[in-house]
Image 1: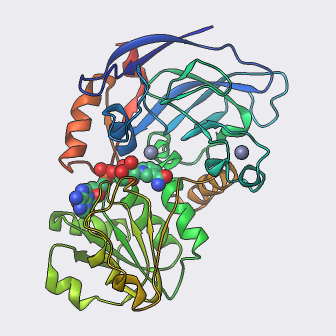
Image 2 (image 1 turned 90 degrees about the vertical axis):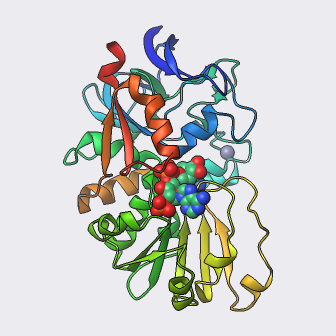
Length: 350
Ligand code: NAP
Ligand code: ZN
Ligand code: ZN
């Protein structure tokens, strides 16, 4: 067994505290990764605080993991000791159902095995995530990390990156389209970078006028303040695509009004009820679509990382020590993050 240091939540209301546990020794198809950095996703906070109900404790959150391979099982082909490697939101799935066969493991019919807040597949053992210094994952769920990028800023690509890249690819966003990214946080800032790299005309749609300069630096062509009703009205029916990263239930109607005929708004942020309800007229007039998208499959996650390597795309980050995780959560709730906190795993030893 591999002695591992981490940080864990023990219930929905207490701060995360140091937590020691053991990882399994790598089996024939496993990769043992010494974790170097792990991003802090808003989903970590939602789950640590039981926002989505049914959280399993103790919980070691973290699904934006990068590190160096420390050992590989005898049948591992893609990795050798010393390679860089990444792990995202999933560590397993059934591998045989229709979605798994289409490289959409996140939509596995049996349910994917999540990196934390889940049980290891076919076991009673809790799965512990990336706020820790070691992890052991089967090769299929480990991705290669381009060597030319700042590794600390690569970590957030494993969730914020793939969650925004995947819908932009699926809905074929590109040149000649007006694309709005709603919410300028961890996901949203990556959405702006990807949509810009794909050649779209990008509008950052934000509640925070103070983020305008950043939005332009990240690649937005325009900034639209969503609380400014006149500005919203002026942009009605002008977008072919909207990527909505708002983390909580909110009013979709004003955003749907921004869509052009046949436009699509894809929800990636809010997993809970959306209130007030969506009016039918918000989508009927204009044949508009409202859709959703969850992370991305392992093949596409690798494709996204290779795209980032080729286009020198990484997240904008602020480093925190393990003891700073709780303060980082509070700042994320105050909308005070530019644009992703990343934990330096070396500080777990302090
Ligand atoms: P984040 O860093 O906290 O960013 C969220 C942003 O949304 C904020 O920076 C803010 O941007 C905006 N916002 C916050 N509250 C708002 C409100 N009430 N109304 C309008 N805008 C608001 O969070 P994140 O890490 O990007 O995650 C966003 C959500 O995506 C979370 O709920 C997370 O659980 C979810 N998620 C989903 C997936 C998936 O697979 N679909 C994957 C990862 C995360 P402005 O200041 O610009 O308004
Ligand atoms: Zn996440
Ligand atoms: Zn499956």
